[in-house]
Length: 342
Ligand code: DAH
Image (tube, rainbow, N blue to C red; front, side, top):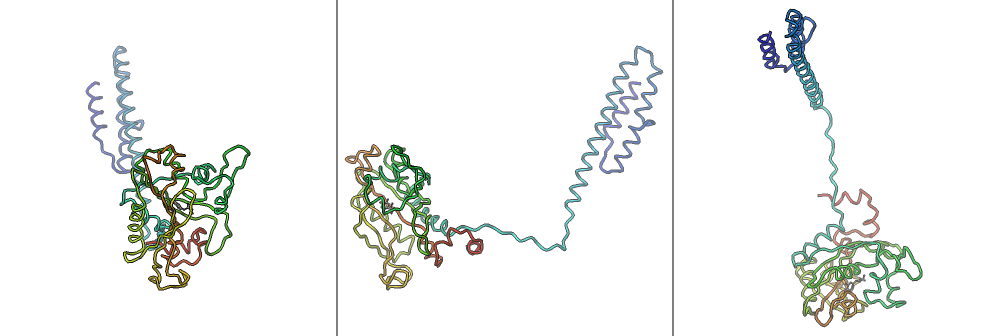
């Protein structure tokens, strides 16, 4: 009996099942009522009562392993046949067109700006678009009720007496504050992002737009460093033959302050419709960080100095890609966007 069981186990183990026919052959040989396992069960009654339970148990195990092998093989054959079914390809079907996304023109311009500043050692910092009044104005040295606040028509979100108002940031300059509160000098960051102003909407201005802010704080940073940085940036961004013009200006958070123009890169400075015949395009505001701003962020203005700048991104995208209405940048119309796919 023992010998027959071992023999049968070997047969079951070595039986290969690769096809549905082989599966059926396995079933007929080992699993049906007249199969070889059942035959051995029938022989149990000829054994002595003492031997019966031991061999009975061995036979049960044998039956279970035959069942398991059958089920496993059956499952595997099912998987194979269903994936074979899936692989059947109808070569006469027309191809399915792929629609890859495209990089938004604003992101293309921002990408170039970031790369230029990254190469100069600036890292990227971001801040929230829902900002506190204190970061957007107070800490940037805007006095309370100062008309400078009206320069930027603000979308207020919450206004509660005695509390810090929440607003949609009107510029990326509050990220300067967040970085200076978080980090110790030397600091060299750019802060790209969306800003919001409650302005009349037209082909030239929209309630949302993009800015890129820059901040550099260290020991003895000078206006010459600011000029060199802006020169280097502008030549890489707008062409090596552009000229720059620094005009004195005012911002509460910088002193002295300047606005920077480049020679119009559309007409080469001769004068055209875009530069309103002036030959110049304004690209950014900048200046030396006001000592009050440094103090507000617990940075000692006697030890450290720095410069900051802020530039618009959207206008460069409009000029570069000859888009004549800023609203197109925000409407997300695929007919516009897909013109920028590679
Ligand atoms: N925040 C200013 C604006 O939105 C732009 C600006 C000007 C940023 C001068 C600066 C700066 O960092 O130094 O009009």
